[in-house]
Image (tube, rainbow, N blue to C red):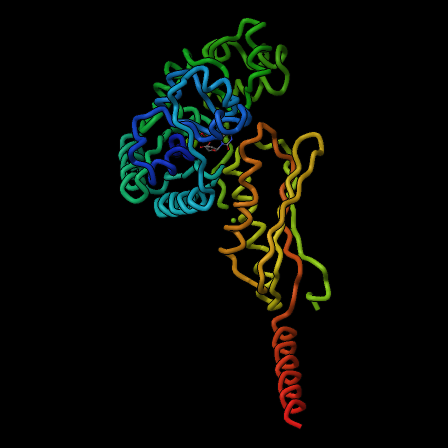
Length: 373
Ligand code: TTP
Ligand code: MG
């Protein structure tokens, strides 16, 4: 059965969100990261606008190098609260178009639109409609890949970035893919690229022109997977996806199977942990005064950061805002993240608090009476 799948990805996401508050920086080489002049040349580029990419700047590059490539670039930090808000709105728009939806990170998702369209022309039309709605509602651009497998749709969304749409049909996909470098195949990173290149495999066409057996013999399972993707044969589907006070704290953490450098993804996980903990706190009517985050980088280097309030709180959005503020200092280090955790401590039950206030009032009244005697 033919499937019509979209992969939608926001263009230079963090930078696009910063531009919403700084329209004067439009069309300038904008880098999201610490200004090297102020950070003693430390930190990395989280993302940058396409104007900055013309100078060779990209995500993960040390800001020291970026400033050499483009001395006139503008540096801004981003507000993770606003990133989260934009991501949420973006995902809400996409889900209106199909219930078969799979979120990948903070700024990308798959949509299976097989039920809504009859052919690739209609699929392309729908992609334009989605792109227009995202632009209209959040004032940011995205790029969309349209194809019949998830992997081809993902490769296609990168094809006409920024603000572009690309359709890979059964008829055209091999011709379109063939000239592309092999690193465009999801799963082929910097290291495997070198390995493939050494054995004469430079373009996706070099993979397509060989048999699966040949590629498997050369590159094992990874090669076999790449061959299946390049030949439009990957068949994975788009999934639907989302007495306490005596205890000292309540916490949850997530360890990632692979080291993560995408802070959008880390924000998502932190948001999820916050929601889960608040669900439990709300059921038991437990408040907290202290909120802490824990972050572990590759190699077990671990940091904790906390913030305390004067009075007990139980507020999902306030907690998220503070957790994201605590996270911010780590976003600009060039380090893959292994684990993220969230903890609430200094707990008190609402009942206990009421009792405490009542006792304080009684004591106050007694003192007043004594004063009178
Ligand atoms: P990407 O979608 O990979 O990149 P992008 O949206 O900035 O640019 P484009 O899609 O147009 O190529 O990542 C989404 C956001 O995730 C990005 O804006 C910043 C964040 N991010 C990191 O925090 N660290 C990283 O190493 C990368 C690659 C991205
Ligand atoms: Mg993106």
